[in-house]
Image (tube, rainbow, N blue to C red):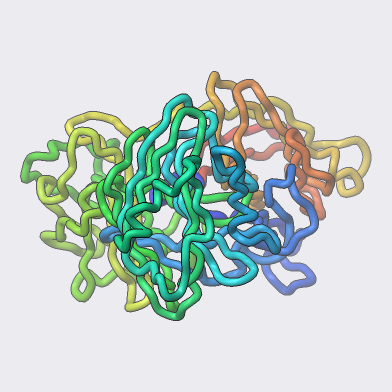
Length: 484
């Protein structure tokens, strides 16, 4: 039941691991670790999407420079950048809309925030609507912490002859009200003040009309992460100052197949924090014995409740085997019939925040977006002609989306039964009916062919298991081919 990230594609890092027959190599590591990530220095890219192949983890262990906080929910966020472009050049306001580089503006009616890191200082950017949406909207916010002494609005996206959007700001109030029409966008960028050692910027939504989501966009162009925010609560942005956010492997009602309960009752809900899933980078996860309910609050509840800095507290807790089990009252967690997930947040020491989530079905209503498995192995070529070691590019597994809808495979892991792993990049989407081949050897990436660059054969000629795990290490495909 574990589902411990907050949105698909919740990490910007993805890696591919392989090793030689002895389990060691020239680096002295038990396995060679490669990263497919826009943040790494690499040698090849897929379609300009920012997915590169290089040594090391996806983030290289680097600390994200900013923390995004909404109530008890916290996220590490990274600025977006594009070479030596300043924020005005990147925003690229033309006619009535913005035209930024990359995939920031999608075809959704969203209100977006992100930090842009320019050649001098950073900017807090707002971008609402889309040229692909057939209606307009309104986004009004109030601010604190945007210093008029240390910065200004470098971009004022306003199609009017006068700056109506910024009228209240120019009048001395820390408010901006953006309004845009059909097939247009609107927004602005506040330059300055984000490179200070200590600051807190608060953004409070006053009106969000004509938008389907309020999101904070983070990371590298081509592998962006979108954090969905609760539309009625303020957010804060501040420097991390050495603090991190780790994930928890959460299982709500672990003794039941599904987490169904009456959200208005006083029944007891068991919430288990388990060990990190197999196959993940454990440095990014918290172990059950790292949580200390005696010294740090272990907050639980719906996203809406936690975003408002409210939460249920455990009635009791105990370690059982490898899991920490906590008991909460259902009513105290403030779920409603439209809640999709239950969230748990805590701390594991003074500098480590913890966040996990799992699917819930309050009242038996299922609200989480789930698709039936659609991924199939459509072709295998595991025994190329001649010496397999000399024909690694000819060894491949072909996957196909056998469903009627697109399939998001972002940061999924392909592995064999002995543990060799290849991690698909962020924002890797397979359209209905489309297929791609994963070659063991090296080559130039295309939309239909990815290359492991493993250095030796991966798939056993006489039989193996093709396993695919999602970004939370849940198994979505296990395909056995027989041993002869």
